[in-house]
Length: 496
Image (cartoon, rainbow, N blue to C red):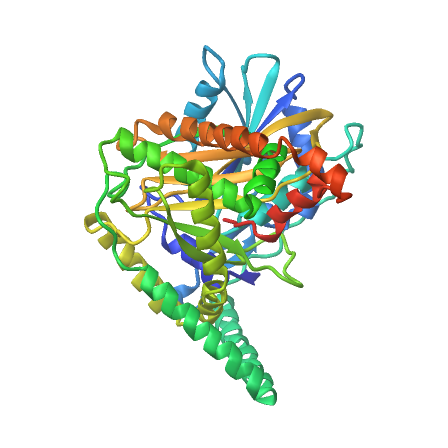
């Protein structure tokens, strides 16, 4: 039995039929589609390393404590590993329509909070695997790590033999209450020890307190409402989904020419998508404010566990009013540099850590009340979410079949009708754009603008760098290796 953190529990409280809180991924493979027995044997062999996949959430009576993870005595693998097929014309559009439908449905709270769908019927001899996990179980970085557990780096890898598993007895109501009280005492004890440790180094503690206070002030300043636009407002229960693609080598070349980070180039391309969408819908991009929540991983040392959410965030105003792509990139770079120095990340991490000390019943009641009110008064502080997670650099294989592409999925909630998730894989970037089905029928405009913006930036970068080989030879300066440029993605990557 293991308690959810404050942040993990919030993803449960924030969920309803119009705001499913799961993250997901589409992985596309080449080669023949594995049959049911092969897929089930794959997961049976990997489950010993994925203990959360056989656990479900149990609520503590009267919300005297946060929910806990317990072994599911009714665990049935075939319920979670499913098969489906895309209809004619068997292309990516059909796959994305399927993705939208699957993402529109809640996961069953009475079972482990994950599903995997093996998708047949794709053109060019390909097939896909759609994985879906609740955000309470895993964040974006953890989700990428889980993908690495299920897949193999060696196409000829031999699956380990399944390990017999017996679920631990489910706790009684009384045991749940006792564990909640014990856990609350431990939380306060840990916080007390941290305070005592801070008192031993008062100057450092004072510096951290000043920086955290400055970050909190910046967070509060960023949560003010923005002018209404059509990309904000109530959302329904259905989702649409569309992918975009870019080469990491191209992104690195753009970064090399114009400065900033890989993540800045990604945000600039997403900004171009929002600008195109605003113009297409009759909004004025020159007056609109698109404020994006940009999650940032704060796992740090000792935070390498697969499960749970270890994130903070910054609120970045995307420069949709800027017409020129290069100027837009420079604007993003300057804004992100300023935000990283504002201590907003540290403040967000502090607030979520302190959340573990809040009474669970109060937190649950207030969060659910806010969720209900959001249906009538959708928030206008955050326009969208943009999350960027570094993925595997080398090819991965599923039962000997090579994964050729990967596209992530991020949930949206009341008030934000569009969200973007980005992940890297084997030298490529996959953008996954989520939208409310009923109010955002023009999602194709968004993804087309992302790819067009990267193409224009690349063309201008190549024109600017045309003389670079001659200049570096004359000066004796060695060019920066592409691998070094790409490593910047892992330094400043965002997560979900």
